[in-house]
Length: 582
Image (tube, rainbow, N blue to C red; front, side):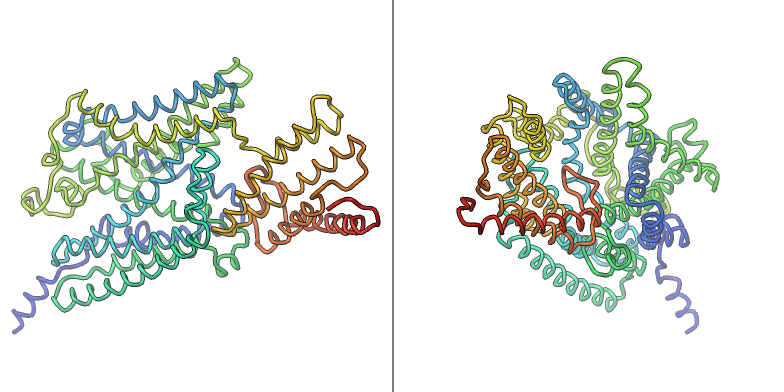
């Protein structure tokens, strides 16, 4: 009996780890908790701007391990030689071509970064698939059918991920906003009239149904005697719990951190993504360097085969230096250092920096899409998920089974088919908006008209004022539609200042023309401005919009007090006998 019990105990699989139990607990499974603690401390001591700046450095820095992992792998580089070598060519050249265009037009180089909409859409999928990959690694001892296990893990992750991204109200609405303003695509109209709210409710129901099915699946695994990974379950619960807390507007996070935004939540979970990625690439490179003739000879093999805390620290520092070199802070240094050296030089250098940052992110997403498949035996071997090259070789795929080595022409043609459609769509729609001359800063334009009226500039006439008012009206309607989809302070702030500016335009034009009657619609504009400011004050902040980032709550309170007095005066004036206002 004792021997039978011992045999059963020996056959019972134990939880596998990626780096090690303690390291996995800190850098992978509990990473969202530590990231939230870091975010809270940073936000309260240094502010939102510093938190985002630190995240950007770390986020760009974690691209470097991708390239170290790829170009340090002898077999992978040999198999996909031209695809990996030519990978940077198309995105970098496309970006630099646009840099040349905007510089020739006298526009700020930063205008080119409208291409980041591609990365914005790609990023959530990239995050989700990394999380799913970790779940599959932790679940590798599960003897349930692999397709069933994989689909169940992916379904429960994807449904909760989709729900949280919709409930966040800060990612998809911003995508819709950019598509309209920068690319002239009014896709936001598809989500007006309560459709977005319906989608959020439907997504929650689907996630709950998927969770119920997942619980039934885990119960079935347990009854069948299949291994159920607790590490996988804890990873999923902690990740999506912290994600919901930091992404979505809720009383708990606002109570702890007034002024918290989706962008800060995105940075918090982004730090989780970074630490997890650094950990798994470290483990992969260690496994690669320890294998005979698997890694490229030289510095890569010498460093990663030694390992140790010092090498790990150096590895992290080098990654952060890479991130800093492509960050906004490096861009500000370039402008300051070179703007007075030679004309136009700073613009081109900044353009190269932005192109390098875009290309780095683009390639990170692209490469990760095919190099990290857990079913590939090379990944399983280098991550220590199998004891030898022969183990389960017949049950897993290899890079060598995926495709044949491609020539230069074939590799470049494939990348053109993959890269050009999304790049072309974004560039062409942006260019059409530029050709049409659509006003993207109606507030600034209107204020320039007001300045011209104040100075009694002869060139400022009624037609110019009318055009400015028309542009403001269009923007207000758009902001109202976006506020209907997801009510957010940025829309109420913009509506308030646009309405106030429209009222000022009418007042100044009447004054210049010597008209004593109240301009038509003036009182309505002022009332809309006051109402929007009061609606804005219901939110904890920040109180900004696309054309302003400097408002504080005290600023708005003082302004509302003044505007109420002006509205009262206008109402009295409107009720005076002989008034021809509204």
